[in-house]
Image 1: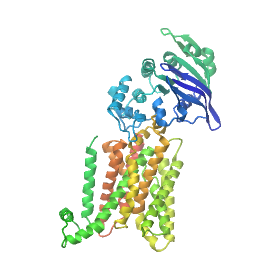
Image 2 (image 1 turned 30 degrees about the horizontal axis):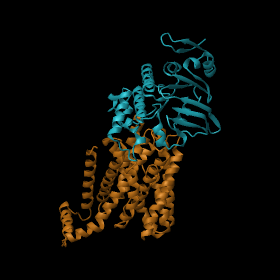
Image 3 (image 1 turned 90 degrees about the horizontal axis):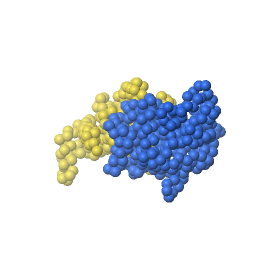
Image 4 (image 1 turned 120 degrees about the vertical axis):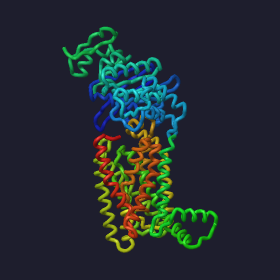
Length: 260
Length: 339
C-alpha cells in the first residue's frame, strides 16, 4: 500500500502541493481528480521521485515492512512503484517488446542483460494488457491507445506493488479510454496492486475508481467513494462551474454533467 | 545476438586497414605485406626491396594507420554517445563545439610546452579533456530549454562556442612564434605527428573513455525515453548521464589531442549505423566505434592520395563529405520529427 503523509512541494516560491496526505490500499484504484494546475501531475512526479519534495513522507508498506520511498535510490524505488507516463513522444527506435523489457531495469545489472525469467515476466505483462500482438511493432508507430497499453505493460514488468498513472487516458478515444481503465481496475482487483491514477474525466473516475480524491490548489479538498466526492457542491466549487450530478442509468455510480 | 552487423563493419575496417598500409608514395602490395608479416613471424631477415618496405611499415604506415584508426574509433563512439545523451541526431563532437573546446585546451597546454617529452604528451590530452568538458557543459546550459535540448539551439550554441574557441586558438597560435606554428596543420586534422609515441599516449585515454561508453548501452537506451521515465524505471539518471558525458568527452579530447580537429565522423558514422542496423545503443556504440575507425581511415587514404605527393588535412576531406550529409540529416530531421 502507498502512504503519503503531509507532502509539500514548492516550485520556487510557489507552493504546488500543501500537506497532502493520501493512502492507496492494495487492490484498490484511487482516482486523483481536480482542475488543471491543481497539482495532480506534480503529486505523481513527486511520489515517483523525479520532483524534489520539501516536506512530508512517502511510504510503501507491505505486510511486514515500511519502505521510506524518499530515501531510496532510483533502482530500489523502481522496485516499489512503477509509473505510466502520458505518452507524449516515444522514441521510434524500439519495439514494444524491447520497451517492455526495459521495465525490468530495476532487477538488471549495469549492462542491462536480461534473463529468461525477465523475458517471461515481460511476456506476461504484455499479455495482461492484451498487447502481445504488438511485440514486434515499433512503439513510435503505434496509435496512442496502443502506446499507452505498452507503457502500462512496461510498468507491470517492473513487478511493483504500486502503480502510478498520470492522466493515461487524456489522448485516447472513448473506446480506448474505457478499455484502458477496465484493464487498470482488473489489475488492481485481481492482482492486488495499489493504483493511484490522475484523471481528467470525472465520469471515468466515477466508473472505475474505488475511491476518489479531489485536489484543488495543491490541497486535498475531499476524499472518499465516488458518491461522497462527486457532489454538485464540491465539484462546482472546485471547477468554478455549475454541475448536475445524476445517478448512472445502469451502474451504481454518479454521473457529472455540466450545466444548471 | 545478431552477428551480421559486426561482420560487415569489421570487414569494412579490415579493408581500410589494408589499403591504408598499402597506399602511399611507395606502394606496398598485399602480397609484399603478407611476405613481411610471415617473415616477421618466422624471424627472417629481409633483403631489399622488402627490407625498405618493412622499415616503411614499422616506422610510417603502421603507426599512422593505428593513430587514424584510434582517432576514428574515438570520434565514432563519442558521436554516438552525444547523440544519445542529447537525444539529438545532429550532436557530433565537432558540431556541438566540444572538439574546438578540446583544441583550445590542447593549444593552451602546448603554448606552455610543445609536447616532445612524454609528460608533455600527457599534459595535452588532460588539458584538452578539461576544455572539452567545459565546452559541453556550457553548450548544454546555453542550449537547454526546460528539459529538452532543441536541435537548433544545440547547433547554434555549439557553433558559436566552437567559433569562439577556434578564434582564441588561432590567436594563441599566431601570437606565439616557432614551435606552435606546427599546431596549425595539426588543428585542421593533419596527422602531422608521426611514430608510435602518440599512439601509445592516446591508448589509455581511449581505453577508459570508450570502455565506459561500451558499458553504457542500456543506460542510453533508457535515456531515449527522457530523463524522468529513465529514472522511474530505476536508472540513477544524473550519475549515469555524467559518467557517459565524461567518457565521451575523454574520447573526444584524446582524438583531438593527437590528431587535431576532425569534424563529421561522429555525425555520419552513428547515423549510418543507426539507419542500417537499428538504434539499440547496446549495438550502436560498438558498431560506431568500428565504423568510425574504418571511415576515418578511408578519409585519410583519400587525403593522402588525392593530391599526392602533397597531403590534404584529413579534416578537409571529412568536411567535404560531411557537410552535405549534415544538411541532408537536418532536412530529414525537420521533415520527420526524427527519433
